[in-house]
Image 1 (cartoon, rainbow, N blue to C red):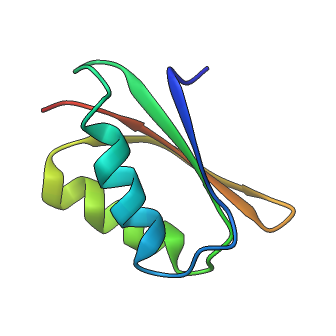
Image 2 (cartoon, rainbow, N blue to C red):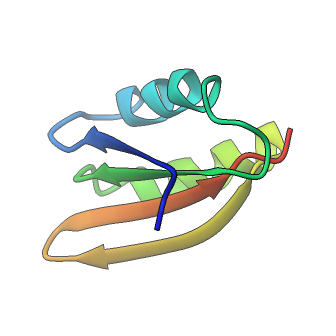
Length: 75
């Protein structure tokens, strides 16, 4: 289970990633942030975000139109 959860449902690109970036600042290294989003471009956006920031995308799932991303803060 995630250490923190961010509800970004209903937000469009780039807001889910921007909110995740801000939320990750409060997550200690080695802990996780789960982001829930409904934007169809979110899977691509979060993969690119994690690659660019050095954080690890631990999982990416979709169920009922809700995308869930578990991001482990590495840096």
